[in-house]
Image (cartoon, rainbow, N blue to C red; front, side, top):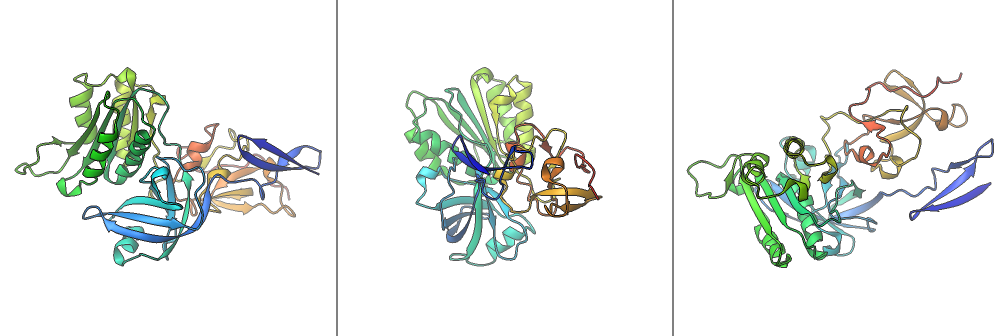
Length: 370
């Protein structure tokens, strides 16, 4: 017996279990993440160590919003890498997606990107992922970005300009030196589109610029500069602001701490913080998990979250309907080897059951049957 349920635009087919209760058929439930083949349409240097990469996919990444991110799998690189979309989808050509990628010393993706002209090369693109997006309030926007974190914030600003928002915006961008700065003209163009009755400021802050240079702008760490020059001096009202971060995790942590100490509510601080392979993989707490499948609907890698029947130490026993007890008595499990640390599942879980801080050795909900 089979029935179909339609909820919030997501169609799921259910089958009846042995006691006549409906359970989702995972084979036909619709994922919110598309995985498609794409080709490198163009690549160019934005700075000495940052590339603009434009991919043209075979299909559209449905539902993508400014601020979200995708994953790119290339060549012989074992795992996909996560990168924020750098444009509002409305400003992209059909099936195209722009990314700003900063080279990382000894990074596999960096070596691939800088090793040759990759135009025409086929890659695998997954997305959209993440919850970072423009809110609907009229509060002032405090945008803080560092490095290639410029991408998500720039996309957010494009979105705000297209939506003709009527709100102040203060965009602080942190870099090391002047040679690391980019997109000045593009952001100046957004400023011209901004509502004339509201403020738009773009503030660049350099942390390693030589003292004797001709730089007249801000110096130091971008979050410290924002606090000293804008927050402490009362230029912005913490009670009438929303914060948007994108960049290195330590920068996000520092900025969120500054705002929280000033009294900003956690719900007013927006960011997606995806990590690299050196970071811990999230772990599912099966005491909190209600098997809502939200994590399964956002996974960008086929086997990063798996349905298992049991655990033998760190090894898991895959679910085999013919020989093992079923998922609904056991657990979902994040395979550390397959996990790419995008943390999409962490943000998608409505019950706070997934976190890198959970017990590293999870257990199933019941023992395996022999």
